[in-house]
Length: 404
Ligand SMILES: Cc1cc2nc3c(=O)[nH]c(=O)nc-3n(C[C@H](O)[C@H](O)[C@H](O)COP(=O)(O)O)c2cc1C
Image 1 (cartoon, rainbow, N blue to C red):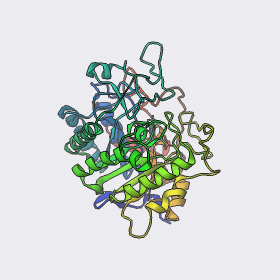
Image 2 (image 1 turned 45 degrees about the horizontal axis):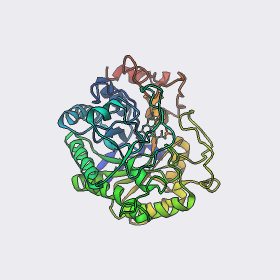
Image 3 (image 1 turned 90 degrees about the vertical axis):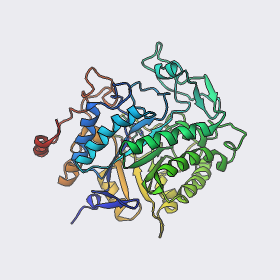
Image 4 (image 1 turned 90 degrees about the horizontal axis):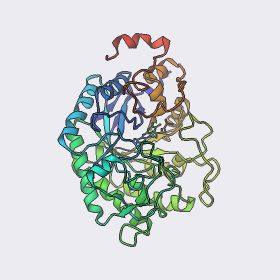
């Protein structure tokens, strides 16, 4: 019987995906040419695209020179950046792939001593002066954490304009669409969470007010791209970067937020389940922690089972994508039950350049057998632990065709 995961689908109005398998966005810290993608980036994205996932979401890309913990994450705020990214998008298109841009602002998840921010003379911007717990700036002396030196955003519309500008450059760079990052404790998420957003203006307080800034950003992107090539990544139970909220707040905020997202006729909503106990762990990277007191989730909680009906209903044109610790079996089962439409795999794509071929042949995914910090560079050679993962021996044929 045909594998439903491998079924071609149309995303939005006319983005023809080869199948329902997506490669999740991953910062890999290899953009060593002044925060622009390099030949190593091209090789990486092409090798993954060549094996045939339906969609690739490119790594989170900063919309202005504020950076984050990763000194070699990419930026997109001028023509030079768009030109560098266009080499990636055209190479991906040449092998039949589709690739979306992911604009990113770290918000309070930053330290003002990082070189990019210092050179730009920019402050750490967040909705309110509430430092995030955690962080580890390995490249700074004493490895400090997230800053206490936060500047409250005076005029959110100036940052909305930065998102619009960056997204317009992404269009010039030839991306097929946008996935807006609205989780992970970064700027949009800072506005959503009541503990990070103490504002008393129209951007803070009620769920409606806390959702206002992310929705304004989304609307600015839609003005450039139109809604049918735009998606958004959200994670109601997220606990990353000090972002956990109570179940009551989660329910109220995301019921309102998702209903507003759905009013915009987006191509997809990417719903993450980070912060849930899902019964399996790829590695220690996102090891699930006990929820903080007062922020516990109902036993067996799954965001799609709470919010899926707001996204998938008769007449809805927005696809439901899921991510975080999915297996092909689980995704297949949910697609068969019409609970979801698309699945992303992220970490498995690091270690499996031939991930789609493995699914096609029923071969198991390789795990990270190298230990250590293979996820992020920088390494002497950006290809290290990036473009040197082997194919399954039964897929060696592909290596003869691989882009060198
Ligand atoms: C090294 C690494 C970098 C990541 N960078 C990003 C990012 O830039 N943007 C984003 O939305 N998610 C990022 N993520 C999260 C992944 O997209 C994904 O949601 C997460 O890894 C769970 O999926 P998985 O279990 O299939 O790995 C990153 C994950 C890893 C492991």
